[in-house]
Length: 359
Image (tube, rainbow, N blue to C red; front, side, top):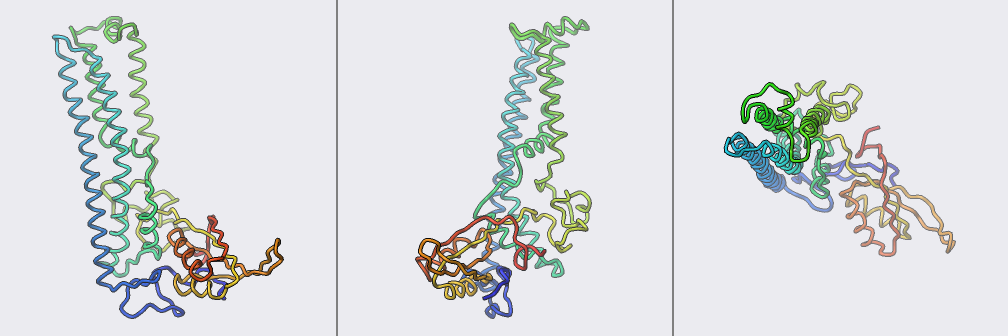
């Protein structure tokens, strides 16, 4: 049996297991003609574009609500017949709630748009510019994203990004309106004690109100600056490949001189490796099970000798490394050949070798 656990890259043929003529995708027991595969990818691309557009529209809606709330609060606060600065404080609270809602929506938008970008860089761009070849695992990366969706950005990055893009200007208007209200109405004053007296809220002194409100804005500024270093989001305007040199973090950049990734791969591809697993199969039908795995999955299998300590009976232990989207297929293949087999699936920290990561 083969001792190389990565004989084949998923989705690609090899001398031992050549791809059937005319098939573009022979993977997990099924084959697609080039036209079938292209049609499926186009429909998936259109679906993800639609999802991203829907969530992008929802982002605009939340921003519009914040702008409308601010536009309504400022004239009301300056109304001489009873306007109060507390309206502007409450508006700041409302805008903060809308910012949080928009940040959650931005995470969903980023999830769908990342799939779109993955297909753009690793499928459509390959068609247009033949020398630009995608990473060998792009299909696996897209499949994992479909099977196990994960937010690509944290809530802190989403909050900071939306704050810097839109909400910092809304907060600025509210702050200037609040200070202007206290300083100018009911009449302009240059007396600091009068200013503090106007800032009071019931039994809460003006000094406390001023400190808390200005402290809140100071926190927003610090938060916006700190989160600017978080760069997992793709952004809404994506730069070209050349502009990314030196601007992408070392963890993600395919342009790092120490990186072993090909220079032509898509910069957008996340560096987070797909989940990998080591599978141990204790069976009395080792050869048929191994043959089935190698033929159907194009994964290498290694046989080890084992002995059941309770029964004293000798068994063979098969070892194979697979990715997250291959686990269920492997278990199904083992059940078909040997329903009595004992299967252990454990996460692997790192798998090096052809078909996984080149050491």
